[in-house]
Image 1 (spheres, rainbow, N blue to C red):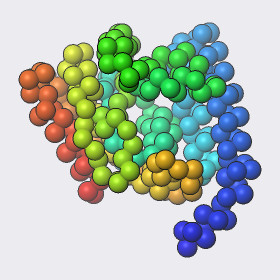
Image 2: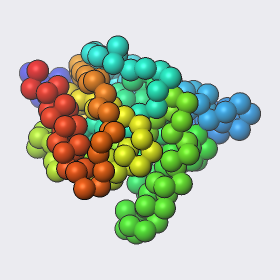
Image 3: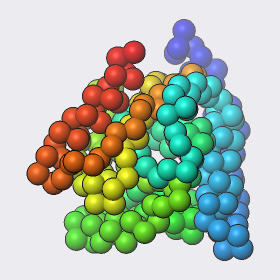
Image 4: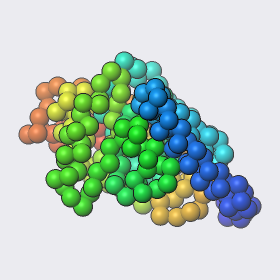
Length: 243
C-alpha cells in the first residue's frame, strides 16, 4: 500500500511541492532579511522560519501532534536538544514548537539561496565542522543571544539517524547549557523519517509527533560530570520514543 501511495504522490511531489519549496524558501528568506532588519530578529525568525515551515508542512502535507506544550515557559530561555531523524525535523520544530530559538547548523547551508541569507540575518549559528576552533568560536559568540525567552537548538547526535535509533550524543550542547546556566529542554520527534527518510528524496505525507519533555535544571553540573547530564537528556528523549 505504501509503495502504491508513493507512486501516486510522485507527480504532486515534483510538479507542486518541490517548486513550492524552492519558491517559498527564496521568498521567506527575503522576508526574514527584511523583517530582521526593519523590526528585530524574533519577528524575522517567526515570519521567515515558523511561517515558512508551517506552510511547507501543510503543502506536504504533514499532520503534527504536539504533546507537552505546558512544559514550556515562554519567558525562559532553553538549550533545546532533540533526536534527529529527517530533514523534516526542522520544519516540525520550527513550525510547531512555538518559541523563538536559534538553530545551530552546518556552514554548508549558508550557500543555499534564500535559506542561507535568511538564517544569517535572523541570527542562526553557522559552524564549520571541519575546523573545531572556528566552530567553538561561533558557538561562544552566540551565547549573548540566548536571553529573554530566546533559546538555542542542538541535535546532539550531530547527524541524522539512519536506523531510527539515537546515536551517541556529543558534549557541545550540554557544555553550552552549563556555561550559560539555562535549562535543557529535551524534545522527542517521532516518525519524521517516514515523511522523508535520511539521504533520500522519497517524500510522503503522513503524521508525526513531537513530545516536549520536562526541562532539566543544569545547576550542579560541570564539565566533570557532564556525562550524567547527557544521560538524563537522552533518557528523557528516549522516554518519548518508548511511549
